[in-house]
Every structure is written in structure tokens, then in C-alpha cells.
Image 1 (cartoon, rainbow, N blue to C red):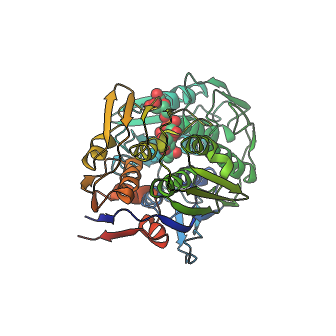
Image 2: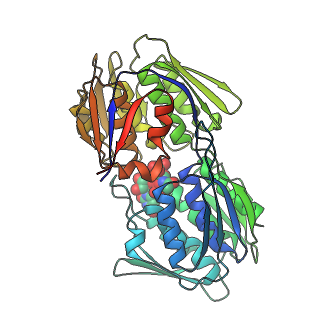
Image 3: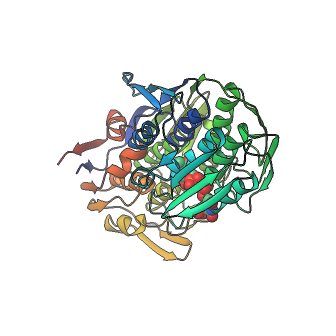
Amino acid sequence: MDRIRIVGGRPLRGRIAISGAKNAALPLMTAALLTDEPLILENVPRLTDVRTLGRLLAELGMGFDMEELPRGADGSGGDRMRLSAANITSTTASYELVSKMRASFWVLGPLVARFGEAKVSLPGGCAIGARPVDLYIKGLEKMGCEIDLAEGYVIARAPKGGLKGAVIRSPLVSVGATHTLMMAATLANGVTVLENAAREPEVADLADCLNAMGAKIEGAGTSSIRIEGVKKLGGTTHHVLPDRIETGSYAMAAAMTGGEVTLTGTRPDTIEAALTVMRAAGVEARVKGDEITVRRNGSRLQAVDVVTQVYPGFPTDLQAQFMALMTLAEGDTEITETIFENRFMHVQELARVGANISLHGDKAIVHGVEKLKGAPVMASDLRASAALIIAGLAAEGETIINRVYHLDRGFERIEDKLGLCGADIQRLSN
Ligand code: UD1
């Protein structure tokens, strides 16, 4: 099993090209199920989560071509994917594949909308809390679906004549339920309104693609989305949104080590909450067009409290990385996790490199220390792995990160991108 070895202490200097967003690419791939015409996605990141979903879609009969395009010297560029759901042979998504990654569950919406039925295994994914699917089920029921739960599968049947438009008010904001219900509503009879919808940029990106396919969606990116159902959707070519979580992770890596890094090909407006917090901690972050230059001039970081929130608040997907950054800050940082319970598994691993963090329910208090010291650590989930990399880059001596497969789910060529900026980082294969 691959491991990553880092010898810390080198300031990062250079340019890092940001890849397409995993969390945008995955729902976009499932959207291909809504049409019998080809959907072409560009700027697709090369990640195991993308391959896992590709395998699941292929199992359903999706034609799936991945053109792996060469990357620029700075790591820029992405792959081109052609998806064709002209000959879907199955509407059952198996436990074996869905349990690997929660986003596979999102095929439920498009399948039931276009084919009138779907049988999808209950999801798996990162071990970061209970993550139920009640909002998906209640939403689809409101659109007239009959839903059964049997042997770990959700079985959904649309009414005769297809799904019906409905007003669906969600008691809490869910990105996945918003994606799923928005996709389902594109082919429903009549108008659907999603109230208290997720405002994440990935929802707006999906809506842009669906509209280019012929859907009639208004308000995506706000908390109220109106979808007027259409009879049929067609194909299109769509460029995947840049990854705001990758952007934030590298911004924090640069801030952690000192030096100066320019993040290119990103969408600075999607990462404002994190940049604001980083600036308050003493990091310089300059935005110019689609670039962000992050710099820390040797002075010590200051502790800044953070509460994770739905977009446009501080993202839960950067909580672990920010915690790593604050391990070396002056003072105590209070980090409150409001989105997922149990998303503090990185705390004990950060302690192994010398961080001083105490846990109190949904709060972690990081007591800043003067230095970290390299150690063997274990990645517990995707974003936690990035936190360990950030800590390792600043720790004295050698840090070995085990269970790197978590990292490969969501960060394209992380060791190459950091290596280009002067980090002493290698992948050890065995
Ligand atoms: C997506 C992102 C993930 C991110 C999360 C929150 C992808 C592939 N994943 O995950 O990286 O951390 O948004 O920004 O885009 N909930 C329910 N019932 C439901 C659905 C959700 O109670 O039916 C709860 C969850 O347990 C959680 C909260 O709602 O506490 C938010 O989860 P949600 O936004 O659905 O996360 P995902 O879409 O799974």
C-alpha cells in the first residue's frame, strides 16, 4: 500500500495549478444518465473517486470514454470524459460500488427520473459521521415516488406518467440531496421548488450543465431553486469548475511553511470564507483574476476561531487542514464542526507530530505549539490526509503518511504539485 514520505521544513515557492473539482465532477457524471445523447466533460480531475463512479456507471450500461490528456509543466489541465447513456441496461447500483463512495448514491435521482425506477445501495464513503439519506427519500416521495428499503437498498418507483413537480422544503441543507432532487426535477411534470437548497458552487455548476442540456433551472447558487420540468434533455460539453477545497488546502500548505505560492486556474470567489480567516491569522492572500498568491513572511500565525458552515461559510472540507495550520499558531484556536459529527479523527494523528489539541464534543481547541516533529501517521479520511500533509511539510524531520489511498480519492498528484514548489515529498510504493 502506498505511503507518502515528507521531510518538513522547506518553505514552498512556486505555482500550483488547481484541478477540476471532484465534488463538481461526480454529480456532473451522474447527470449524463438523464439523456440518451453524449455528455462531454472537460477539466476532469484524475482521481480514484472519479474512476469508482465511472465503474458504477459502466455497470449500468453507460458508454464511458476517458481521454487522459497530458498535464502542463505546472500540473495544469484535466482529462476529457465522454459519457453516453443511450443504452442503459440496468437501473440497479450495487452495494459493492456504492459502499465505496457516498456520491454514487446520487444516481438515484436521474435514474428514477428517466427510467421510472431505481434500486440503489445505501451509501458508504468517508467515515465522518452518520450521514443518513432521509432528505433524498422524503424529497423523492414528494415528487410522487414510492420508496421501499430492502436488504440495504433503496428502491424507488416513479408514478405512471413520471415524477411530479413539488415544493420541497428541506429541514437542513444537504449538498447531495440538492443535487439529486434538482436532477430528478429536470424531467418531472410541472414545476419543482427546492427551498433551503444548498448554495455550494458545485450545485450552480451542475445547474449550468443541466441548463446547457436543455433543463429549465433558475436560482441555483441561492437557497431557492426553481426547476420547470422538460420532456427530454440533450447532450452538451461542460468544463468542470475548479476545486475550491484543493485551492484552500494548498493555500494552507503555503501558509504553513512560509514562502510564496501562486494558485492558478482557480475561482477565488468560491473560497472567500477561508481566505478571510487566513488573512485574520496573518497570511497574505492576493487575488488577481483566476489566481491567488499566498504568502507568509516569517512572522508567527495568530490563532483565529472557526465554525464550519454551509456555503458561503467556512467549509467543513477545510476544517482538518485549518486545524493543522493552527497547530503552530500563537494562542488557542477554537474549531467548531457543525456539519458532521465525528469529523475529528485527524486530532489524534496530528498529536503524533506534536500538536496539542483537546476535544470537547463538537469543538476542538488547538493550543498552538512552537514546532512539530515528524512521525509516522495514518490518514483516516480524505480531507484529514491533506491535514497530515500540511503538518508534515512544517514538521522537523521525516513524516510518513500511511493509507494514502484516501488522498488519491480527492487530490490529483499532490506529491508532484508540492514537489514542484520545493517540498521534499515522495510516494513510497509498497
Ligand atoms: C457533500 C460533499 C462533501 C462535503 C459535504 C458538506 C461531495 C461528493 N461531497 O457531501 O465533501 O463535506 O457535502 O459540504 O460533494 N444529511 C441528513 N440527511 C440526508 C442528507 C444529509 O441528515 O438525507 C446531513 C448529513 O448527515 C450532514 C449534513 O446533512 O450532517 C450535510 O451533508 P450533505 O451536504 O448531504 O453532504 P454530502 O452531500 O454527502
